[in-house]
Amino acid sequence: MINEDGWNRTLKRRLLLCALLASCVMLLLLLRLWQVQVLQGEEHLRATLRQSVRPIRLTPVRGRILAADMTELVGNRTCYDLCFHTTEMRRPGAFQKTIEYLLEQERLLAYLLKRPPALTEKTIRRHISHNPVLPLVIFRNLTPAELAVVAEITPPIPGLDVTSHLVRQYPLPGLATHLLGRTSWSRPDGEDLAEEYPRIYTSPQLVGRSGLESYYDQELSGRAGSRLIRVDVMGYDHEILTDFDTPHNGNDLILTIDPQAQKAAESVLQGRQGALVAVRAKTGAVIALASAPTFDLSVLDQRLYQKLSADQAGRPLFNRAVNGTYPPGSIVKPLLAMALLENEIVTEEDEYDCRGKITLGTHSIHCAKRYGHGPLNIVEAIKFSCNPFFMHYGMELGIDAWQPFLTAAGIGEKTGLDWPEARASAGIRPERDFATRKWKRKWLPVDMAYASIGQGAFTMTPLQAALYAAAIANGGILYQPFLVQTILAPDGKPLRHTSPTIRHRLPCSQETLDIIRHGMEEAVKAPQASAAALQDAGLPLAAKTGTAEVGSQENRRKQTWVICYGPVPEAEYAVACLVENGESGGKTVAPLLSQFFRLWLESH
Figure 1 (spheres, helix red, strand yellow):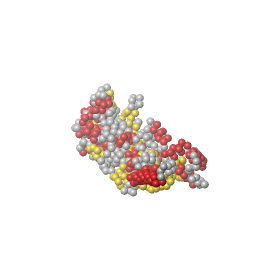
Figure 2 (spheres, one colour; figure 1 turned 90 degrees about the vertical axis):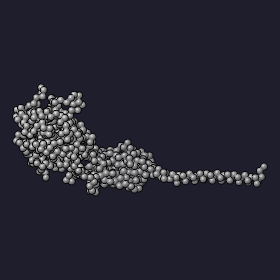
Figure 3 (cartoon, rainbow, N blue to C red; figure 1 turned 45 degrees about the vertical axis):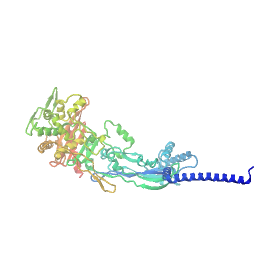
Figure 4 (tube, rainbow, N blue to C red; figure 1 turned 30 degrees about the vertical axis):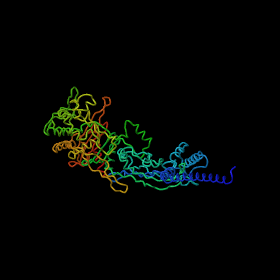
C-alpha cells in the first residue's frame, strides 16, 4: 500500500511530466508560428492577395489616323451599352434564383426598348463563371431615344448601368478603305500579369486586322492599364483598391495621303475593277492608293464582311494597288529602251522599219498600227508604242543584259511599303531561271520577245509601276514607298518621322534618261500618240500606255495601263493606273487619268 508521501511524489512526477510535455507542445507551436508568420509570411501574404484581389485590365484609347493635311481619316466615337452588374443583383438562396431574376429584368428592358431579348441562362452562367467583376452587356449601341427610356425607369433597377466604350469612326466614309484596314474586337490575355495574378479580368479592345490598322497596331493600341479590386470567394467585387497602372493611349499616325487626290482616284475608278497609285517622285511618299471595287468601313459588320468575302468576281476586299499582280504590257518599253541604249544595241538615230507585224515562228504579233509605222527611231517607238521595234531589238539584247535594269526598277521584289508584308506581292521578273523552274525548259528567244512588250513571264503591281515611273522622272532613283510620314504621341509630340530611303538606282546615264523622257513626253503631246488623251489633264505630263492580253482564247481579255509623271520638266508626282478588262491603255485608262488630275487640281 502506497503511503501518503509516496503518492505525493508520484503525483508531482506526473505533473512535472505533463508540464514538460505541454511546454514541448507549446514550443513546437511557437516554432511553427514563427516559421509561418516570419519565414513564410511574405509568401502567404502573396497567396492571400491572389485569392482576394483581382486585377482588371483598363483599355487605352486607340490612336487616330490622319491625312497629310491633318484631316481625320479614322478616329473614335463613344458608344453606350446597357449592362447588368451581376455583383449587385444576387438573390438570396440558390444560384438559380439570381439567374431567373436577371432574365426577368432583361425581358422587362427588352419590352421597354422594343428590342428582342438577348440573354440566355447559358450566357449568364458563363459570364459569372469567367468574368463576374465585369459588367454583363445586354444591349449594345443605345440610341439617344433608348438612353432617355433607360433614364426614366422608375423605380430604378439595382445593378443596371449604362457603360461607354470607344469604337472606330470614319469622318470620310468609304475613303481609303483598303489602305486604312479594318479592326475587330479581341480580348487580351493579360500575359504580363499572369504570373502574379492567375485570374485576370479583361475588357475587349480593338485590334488591327488589315492595312495600316494591322501594320501599326502596336503604335495605335497604346498600353493598357490595370486596376485592383477586392473580391470574395465567389469572385464578386467588394471595393476598388487602387489604379496601379494608368493606361497609355495609342499614338496618332499622320499619313502621306492627300485626301483630295485619294478622293479623285476613287471617283474615277468607281464602277470599274482596277487601281490607281500616285507617289511623290522625289521621295516615294504615297499620295493616293486606291483599289476598286471598294467598300465602306463605317458600316462593315460580320454579315457584310462574309458577303464581301464571297464575291469572287469583284473581290472588293482585295487591295489591287498593292497585292494585285498583272502583266504590264507596253509600260515596260521605256525600261527596255534604256537597256538598248546603254548596251549600244541602238542609238538615238537608228531606225527600224515597222511593217505592222513581227513573225515569231508560225505566229505573227501585230503592231498597234496594223499597216505599220514605217521607219522610226527609239523616241518614236516609245511615242507610238511599236511592238515590232521592241520585240526585234529585245531579242537582240537578250534577257541577261536586261536583268540589271529590271532589278534596279524593282521588278520581282517587294516594295518595302509599311504594309502587312505577308499580303504584299512581288510580281514576276522575267529571267532565265523562271523557265527552268516553271516551264521545265530553257529560256527561248520567243520568251524574250514577249517579255519585251510586257507579257509572258512578267507581272507587276500598280504600286511597283508607280515607283518605276517615279525613278524615270527623278533621275534614276527607285525609292522605298511609305504611307506614314509622322507618328505622334497622345500629347502631340512627334515620336518618329519617315525619311526617304533609296532602294536602287537605274544603271543608265543622264543622256539615256533624257531620250526616254523625250519619248514619253511625245507620247502625250503628239496628236496620234498612244497617250494623247492626257493632253486634257490640265498639266504637262509624260506617259506610257500599256495593254496586255490574258486568259484563254474563250476568255480573252485585256489589262490596260498608263504610267505617267508630271508636271514636266521637273516632275513632282508619278502615277500608275490599271483597269482590268479594258480596251487599251490609251482609250480606257488615259481618259480616266486626265479626269483624275482635273478633279485633283480643282480641289486645291
